[in-house]
Image 1 (cartoon, one colour):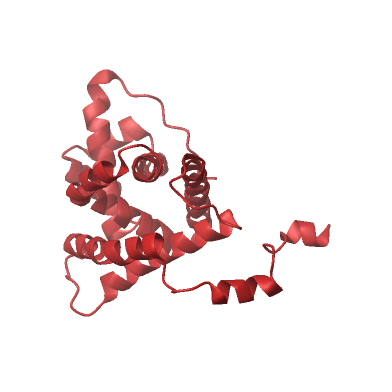
Image 2: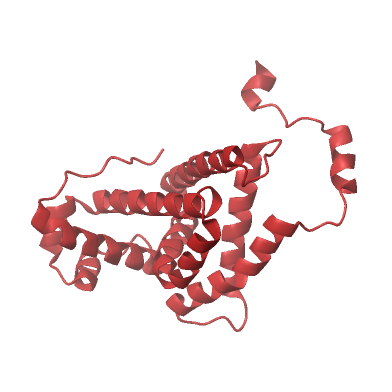
Length: 226
């Protein structure tokens, strides 16, 4: 898993500086990738590069802090909408704050596109988080249980992030990355909610046919070889 340990807690007077640097890094990493220099992030945050190093210690530690913040924010937002009472109101509130979520979504997409071991760990952490809040939703009666929850979560994540990437590449989509992300979020919300709420097929004939041949989820590779 991605290391979720936070760097040494800053002094109280550093809290606003820390948050400002982290927000600037999330925005810049999402827009320009993780090769961007510390100086560019510092300029965006209105601080010196030395201040970034003082607060976070290293660029890698800054990225770990960004990961942790994104994981925490996504988990909380999903839990509010999918599990807690008053979900429709929470969802409306999140729609009104969509511009605030744009940098986080851009950061997640960039983390996935970046590839490599960190991307794999990032995805696995998001899957683990999703399994947690989906299980809470099933227990609360707001989410239908699945025959294979891990597979369903991975499919939904792939569909969601794949749809966002396709929208950003669609002819006529805004060229500006910030506007493009907001446009993509707006375009994918309705079809995602339709599919999750109303379904796609009008009957279950295809599922029943599939279940005749594959009645249970495939065994894990370790089980199959054990």
